[in-house]
Length: 182
Image 1 (cartoon, one colour):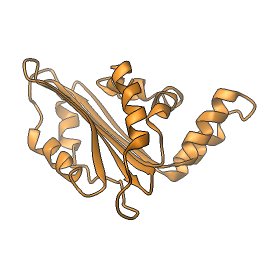
Image 2 (cartoon, rainbow, N blue to C red):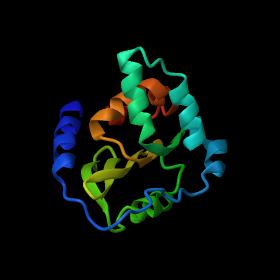
Image 3 (cartoon, rainbow, N blue to C red):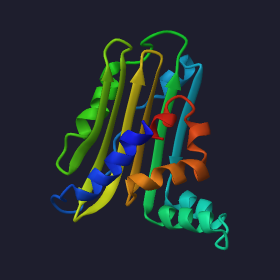
């Protein structure tokens, strides 16, 4: 998966921009009823204020922290929804498809699609481009007993996702499938 994402980072730098500024915020369904059925769930919403607080906690004298702070400066919000269940397909595929449908809007480009029919595993990665700038990122990963949706609004390079994941502990927060990012 790491090799695939490295190749995607290079591809993303060469994809032409389209249209004018677009909002990369996805309308996520109300998954709160699923939280009661889930064995593990993550509902994370980081708005600009919370992202500024996270950036303020980083040490400017540390090169890694300074680089992470620079990445955070371009991000407006992060939304993560991740659920694991004790049984197969305890969630509605229609809810996930409704999010996928939003990603067919102009400006969104699918940069990765991995589907394993045998295991019923699906991973779709999208970016929203505007004037040669990435304005949004979305990842939808699903398996019979879990799914994860990640929506990042703002300017971020694919190669910066591992740094963001490390400093915001996204792997711990979305333990189910956020690891598919890296």
